[in-house]
Length: 350
Ligand SMILES: [Zn+2]
Image 1 (cartoon, rainbow, N blue to C red):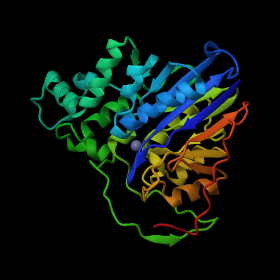
Image 2 (cartoon, rainbow, N blue to C red):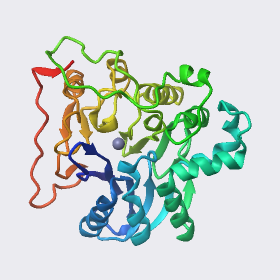
Image 3 (cartoon, rainbow, N blue to C red):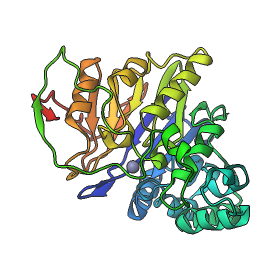
């Protein structure tokens, strides 16, 4: 069975985003012999590009599965035009307001009610509520992507419901969480921004150790999904951070599916240094790693992340304003040329 993965360019300036399309099956056959999956939709204008791409290269208006890895703007905004203009069968998307009953004990204010909390979460995620409304109107079936959900050759490795519900109170738009939760999850509300300092890097040394601050709680809710196609393992990570990635690897181990022999790996969070450590890379290895990052984003991807991937034998490719296409068992598209591989950098961010 053949497959191809397209990474569309997303973002301007410092803001990166994700828009990925996966197609597998008999790619030279009819539409019904193929499966098409969209993983995140980038910003609003990215949605239009995805639609055009699907019509131009896949000659269809039907998308079997849309996955919203998490609810941040750079991943979710483009999904609205897709649901509006294409025929989508299933949508994998978290609905945090539906968890209000289970999590109301996790806030400082003990008087908070389920409906009050639901309303607060919905208000902070209006764009996502609109997407849910549109999906319901269009009769698209919505499933929350939690550990163990399966379909279309895919298994959700994380987050578990339990981990997800502990993260919701730490979202920017929710009331103050109880202190123990912040300690337990090792979270701060948002990662500190600082100027870049540079140091030397070379093979044989490890600069991707664990002292980097963890990514945001919102990023750690990202659905981490594994596709198994034709004996190949393709891993997509959204903006998941180290804790979430370790939990996903634990789950994969429990299923007897190691992630150390992947064929393709999506580098989390546009290659940010807050999301990957050498311990994570000991558990997730692929010969090919793709990064979705804006052309001008100074910190995406971090050079010490792409170097770290090089050190474990991965070839790294970054979108930077162009479409990247990875394919197996299907010819190169006419007129398309090989993308430039990320070099090994002698100087990286400290
Ligand atoms: Zn992102």
